[in-house]
Image 1 (cartoon, one colour):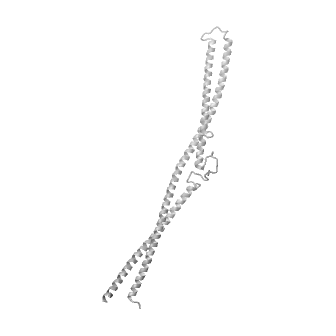
Image 2: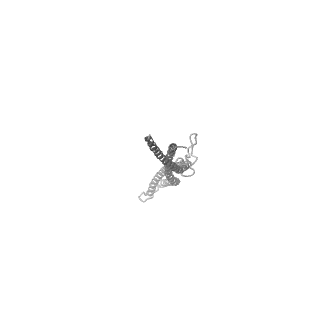
Image 3: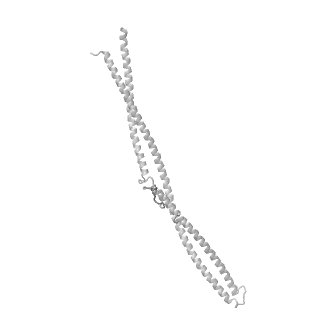
Amino acid sequence: MASNKDTVQQYLDRLKKEVTEADQELVNALAQEASKKSALDKKSRWADVLRDLLATITETNRLGMIYLGTLERTRKYNEKSGKNARLCIDAIKILICEAKKLLDCTEVLRGQIKVLTDRIDNKIPDRGANSIMANLNALKTATEDALTAIKDAIKALLGTFHEEEDLWGLLAGEKGLLFQVVGSYKLMTDGKKPDLEDCASCHPQKTPLFPMDDEACDFYTKTKHQYETTLDELKDLQKEVEVVSCKREFAQARKTALDKAYAAAVAAKACDTTPAAAKK
């Protein structure tokens, strides 16, 4: 039959074994908690990076769409200005043609006045202020002045015509402002200007650059999806951290209780052996 001493020792051995197991269980629980917290921290930092990146993309998209709107309005105004410049060129052409006709008619009139003056010059003695010759000379002077004015007008119209052509070229010509505005719009939406040739080193976008929040924009879509997925993973990791933290708290409580029980058992055994030694 086992003695009481053997029973106490067996109890102590069992407690010691459980304390050892509790130590290992706590070590494992702490390691799991640390691992989950580390993963949660990394995932949280990654979520912050994606959040900032998504915010940057969103702001870039907002500014880009404002710029696209400005380009579109500029294109419409430029088309109208180019059309007006073309109409001005056509109108100036008409004015030049009409001025040329008027010049031709005035030159004919000058010739007729000369012929008439030559014919009657020696046949009319009266050369007073109101005489025929005086009126013919006044008409001749007025005609010369008119010819000079018409020539000056044609010269001015020709200068205006060339300037208007230059203006039209700058606005709506082959490489004018309209072409550049349309090219800028294409560059922002398609990633390539119409006048650029394909080459081996060029890699035009297969999806539109703007709007960036369009489903066809793979970069924005992937980033947004990755951010949303990361947020879901964060929630799951948070739950896992709460679970392992709870396990660690239980392991800590169990170890503390076993440490106290073992210490109390060792103290009780010491008290039990002290009287026996005194009797001897």
